[in-house]
Image 1 (cartoon, rainbow, N blue to C red):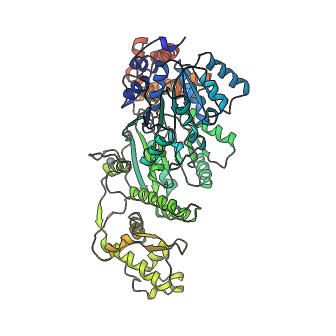
Image 2: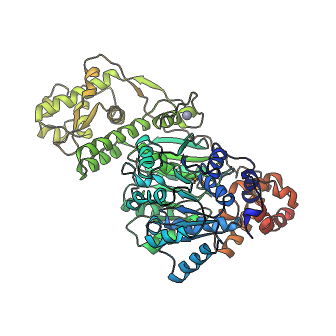
Length: 606
Ligand code: ADP
Ligand code: ZN
């Protein structure tokens, strides 16, 4: 049975197929624009609801919608999720056997598919294009469209050939979608995909359900464990580390502490990676410890936290990685621990990279911005949105700065001491020295190195005894974040002054620093669906067990049966008949028929 006959308006489909009450943001305008035959470029944050923008037109326009996606590992999941809704979908990529691929092509030729997902390399094959000319096509959706741009971090060469769609199928509407927001990427997409006529839909990139928090790295493992134990004892989440070695060590350590933790990085063999990804996406409380290699293929909606044990190298990366939390719209945490060593390490990686100078400079800029973000004394969300060109007038009330206002102090004099110490030492020896040595000089410590280089004879020796080592580290970190000091290209890890430091040194400018972060009293827990009475909690667990059972029979992820938010509504409203059940968010016709009775039986038992 074709869904095309079932219902006609986008809103009907939203209701009967997807079980949702209202469109979000620009969804409806995008859908109507596409149905009318227009092209579109959609910029929406992760979890914003991009898929619906082409899935509903795919059902309404005659013919099959072709969805181009680079995420081969995701296609199976995406198709499974659609089949769960009763939508006729299939995929074609290199993971299929020749026989399975032939079956899919037959279905396509016989008009039995509403949506077909294909990898870009398949799409641009002339045999495939020929095939497409023989069938009616509803639309082309180009997912992860930023892959066409060199500017971004996920460049795919095949994407640059996708302009053939415009040339060969000028009357078929095209929609390009991405969660990457910056203007150069946007321009690249419009240009390379020949989408100059497209209407551009830019959504707010705010993710109000994510709580941003940055803590100062002291004992990172212990800090992580405290965070997990107080807020995420039974949740799924991601812990990011910079190196493979650290990923392995952290995963092992978490296992020893009793967590269901799994490592994931590019050094593992493909089969094991796949297995860990599978366990994560199907599991209820699996913590995955990963390098940034993990992410592009993650569609799990109930990731409750993203924790960074190392600082990401740009705000773009940070925003994308933290954006994997809370796609279901329920409260989630983005937690980051950072320290001065991170800054030094990232700068060194950058210095030693093969990239050309302009590129290095760009990366350097991005790193500075990230640092500045960590040291903020104002609302983090406002700063993030401002970075992506969005204004927000009010502080958000859902970041650590808003929740625990920071105290600042006038650090002008301290800054001047640091800057002149760096200057004198370099003048004395000819090159820059590292943070720890400079602090020794400030504190007047006669260390071996101080004596070796005769730095006890420098005029800044011992001028900083009013502060502790920790306090000086904080001053250094914040001066680095502010771009007043930089790495000395001529020495390994040594520091020098930048142009920005001049007004400070001359006393023309004052600085205010974040008072050294107190070991923060843990923030109030984020409000989560699990914050129920004990009775509710029992029902919540029983319903999740039922979901896991139904999921494992079909070998799909539990969230494909129902999201946590739908289960949460079951606990709240306790529907005991089909009519009530159908009112829950996320319950469409198909799922009502297939699953309602199972869950109602559980509810009745309680
Ligand atoms: P994106 O691709 O933008 O990251 P998805 O398309 O995967 O986001 O959507 C994120 C989640 O939001 C999915 O679980 C989806 O079913 C849900 N969703 C999308 N649109 C709506 C809506 N109008 N009402 C409720 N939930 C929605
Ligand atoms: Zn805030």
